Image 1 (cartoon, rainbow, N blue to C red):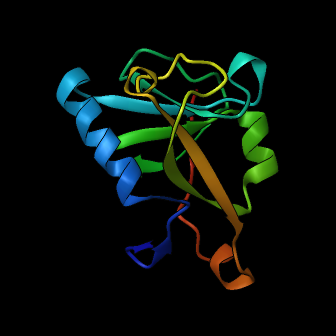
Image 2: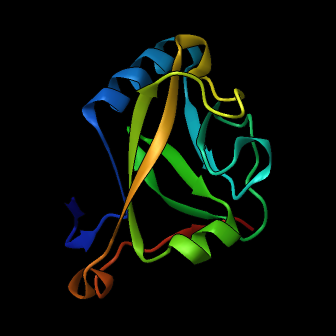
Length: 129
């Protein structure tokens, strides 16, 4: 997906978007955070906006339906050359802290490497301060 001639780092499946709409109705503004380990592994987590604060240097790689998607700074260094597609699966993820858990769902990211041409024209990331 391209915006203003820049290549997006993030997209979402229709199935995940349906879950996000459901979560918006119940919780309002949302945010996503994908950590680099601990109890949730690298599973993307969905929180009410302000329910989690990115650490210094974490990267915001884009938005989904207007909701920021943040990546742990160390994880981003590893995955910075990849496009993220947010998807959702039936079942529970390893952490259970994410808002979709009570729905019997878990968010998941699919990755693909950017082409050399895409790498030259990526949307910039925002870093937390």
